[in-house]
Length: 405
Image 1 (cartoon, one colour):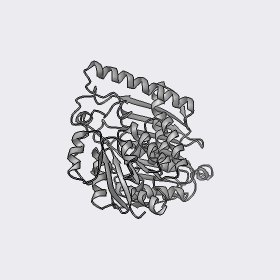
Image 2 (tube, rainbow, N blue to C red):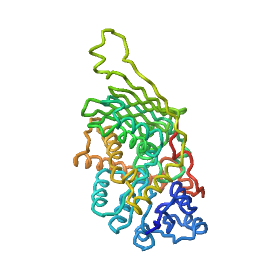
Image 3 (cartoon, rainbow, N blue to C red):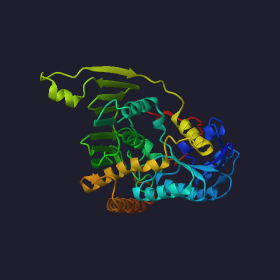
Image 4 (cartoon, rainbow, N blue to C red):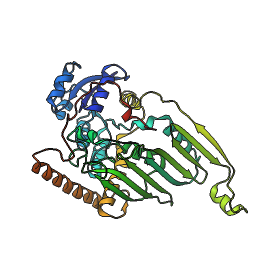
């Protein structure tokens, strides 16, 4: 196989962007072979633009014999189903983020992926960003020493009510399965665990419909603790303008700050713990050096993930974002929801009991939401259905999917 025949399931905004860059030859090793969407108008519009078979049913596309791999860009709750179906049929799968809505389902998906022999990736495109990669390089080289604290304020995900009204699946428990933690912040949560690791327990507070007429959370504050005594604080919202994107990672040997397209690394000449108990001056600071890195924006991260996925299939290259790692980010957000809903601490990794508790409460919210919609005549409770999933026809990724400083 020299070229990967790719089918895309779900051609809304991000699916259309993937479609355009593959069809226009920007992804080495990939050709567009088939498309799928449940919206007949969308199929009509795109069928005239892309001369490939178009399916209404994703399972039929997977089993058609026309594709070697699929990209799943459907609403979140369907990601595990299509990826699992593909992998079981020997078809490679690349999922949009998040890996799913429920950790319990993604656990089963990962077992299928590990047994299938097929490649499984996830679209964590911000792992390709030069600043985050530099931060990981510094941390893995011991540049901050023993981790002490991570603080990430990422409140520049601002969205208006019009955004939430634009699609019937947005900002619903039945559609997205959550709000800012499931739609905007998965990239940030993935980077948090990618750089700093998975915490041992979480206490979170999620504000549901705090700033918008929606049922799901549009603000979240997460406090996390680690086995070695380190802590993390993560704050995000879609209801604050102007927002901030500032990440600080501290250890006993140094500190990394990422803000406004710059990484500042401060290295301590003497470990802080050693300096604390040997210095005879009460208000002194250990000697230190400071280095700043400004790494120009390179090629779009989505394209890099797509090309890496093709190389993984065709050349057995290592995946930048293995699909089985998607459960790490999702475990943090599931734990945050469960903590907020039960007003309690939640341990990680999530136990089967906690997974069942999360699934039960989410299902209760879905049923309550559906009952309200039915009482309202089928209209989305957050606002008008709007032009759900209307394709703009854009072939390049727009800025809202990239790192926002």
